[in-house]
Image (cartoon, rainbow, N blue to C red; front, side, top):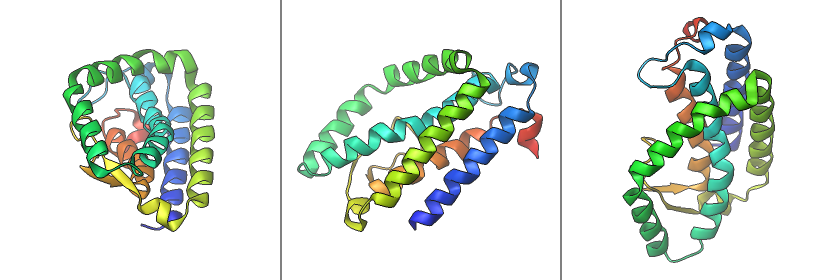
Length: 174
């Protein structure tokens, strides 16, 4: 996948996020989603959170990709053992995140994070983008057993698109 493709998909998700937040009423945002226990507002925060996580994962991939492959495999195995607590923390974190940030805060934070990810992506060397590590596949359906840095950059938008389908906002049906 080319850098430009990843940058463009991040830009599309950013515009879409703004459109969804701006077009939604407070009642819609506080309404239920399809297939999750979150409200639309909480799910939007979780979608933003997918981009926030990438910033940390990039650092982790850079470190563990330099270690013997068994190290990242062991790390992923240990993380998979903690899948249940991860899902609880992941769920609870999104409950308050949207309320804390509010609409404007979520939009600003997404802009800031996407700008940073795009800037870093453009600075990555071709060799750096091929470096990778093992991931805890039990944590997310889009985590592969082994992911390169390039795949990690792409992951955030895969996560976004997956959860967008669960929103029940009128603007999400357009």
